[in-house]
Length: 90
Image 1 (spheres, rainbow, N blue to C red):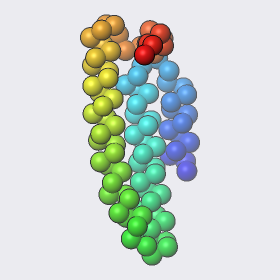
Image 2: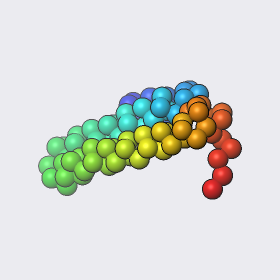
Image 3: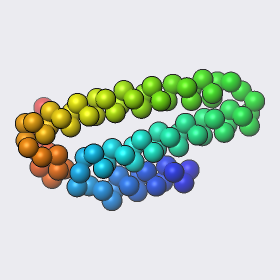
Image 4: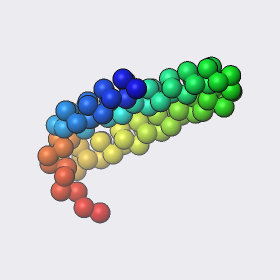
């Protein structure tokens, strides 16, 4: 719970650079993974451990897609500052 709150706080406080904003998202995924493992052990259920094995896969996919978006945005705009990206329309 504390890691999740720190992740939300990190997103809200670091609004200048998108790369820095993506790091708290990874820490929140880590907190969810830890919660799955703790509840799986305490409830003596293997389902939480199986979900915990899928979370790194989702985190890797999210990081790869996010990095691709960052690279494309940097090539088009020349910066990855959040203030200059808020005008993206699609």
